[in-house]
Length: 307
Ligand SMILES: NC(=O)c1ccc[n+]([C@@H]2O[C@H](COP(=O)([O-])OP(=O)(O)OC[C@H]3O[C@@H](n4cnc5c(N)ncnc54)[C@H](O)[C@@H]3O)[C@@H](O)[C@H]2O)c1
Image 1 (cartoon, rainbow, N blue to C red):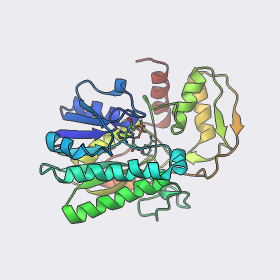
Image 2: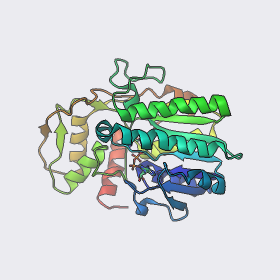
Image 3: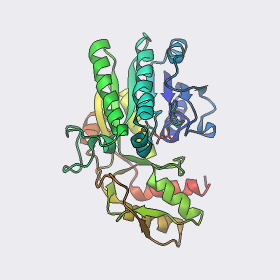
C-alpha cells in the first residue's frame, strides 16, 4: 500500500516506518526535523522536510495519494504546551486538521491512524487501569489537543465517512527515544547513568506510569491498519511502575553507581497513570509482548551503542 507517516524521523514513527518498509509498503514520510533526526529515516522511504501546518500539505496528498496515514508528528512536550498553549494548538490541532483535510480529498483513502495519549487525556483518575469509557479530563493543553483531534476525527467519520483509529498510548520507551527532552524518563535516566551523570527523580518517585515498549506500539499501529475497526483504543500494559522502580531497574542494568537523589515535585504532575487495554486485546487482537525487563534491556543495549 501507499502509506504516509508524519513524524517518521522521530522515535516511534521511525520504528513504524522500518516495519512498514520491511512488509513491502511504499512509505512517504513528512517531518520538519524539529525533534526527529534524519539518521532515523529509513533510506527506502521518500521524504518531505515540511511542517504539518504548511499550506502545501494538500498538494502532497494529491501527488502521493496515500491509502493510509499514520499521524505521529506532534509537539510532544507537556510542559511546553503549558507555557505556549497557542503554539501547541497550532501544531497539534491545526496541523492535524491540515492533514485530515488533505487526506479526505484523496479518493483512494482507507484509514487515518492517530497517535493520541492515554495519560494526558484521562488525567489523574480513581479507576486504575483506566478504560476508554472513563470520562476524559485532560490537565494540559497537550492533552486537550489530543482529545480535540479525536473529536474532529469523529466529525470527519460522520460527515465524510473517514475511517480512523486513535491509539491512546501509554508511556512509550525504547531505542531512539530522545534523552534530551522533558518526555521519556527511561531515555533520560539511561543516558545520564551511562554517561556518568546524576539523574534526578522528581518528587517522591512514588508516582506511577504504564511503560509500553516501542515495538509493541508498532505492532498495535499495524493491527490498527489491518483490522476493519474504527474508534479509540488504549495501548498500554495495565501495569503500574513507580519512577523509583524504573530508576532502580535501569541502575542495575547499566551498572551505574549513581545515588538515588530526589528533587522538588513538578507542579501539576500526575500521580498515577495506567491503561486498561482489554478493548485492543478483544478487537485488535493486540497485547504487549515485551515485559519491562526485556524492553529495558533492549533500550540500555541501544544507548550503549550495541547492535
Ligand atoms: N513517547 C510517548 O511516550 C508518547 C506517549 C503518548 C503519545 N505519544 C505520541 O506519539 C507521537 C510520536 O511521539 P514520539 O515520542 O515518537 O516523539 P518524537 O518527538 O520523537 O517524534 C515526533 C516527530 O514529529 C516531528 N514533528 C514535530 N512537530 C512537527 C511539525 N510541526 N511538522 C512536522 N513534523 C513535526 C518531529 O521532528 C519528530 O520527528 C506523538 O504524536 C506523541 O504525542 C507519544
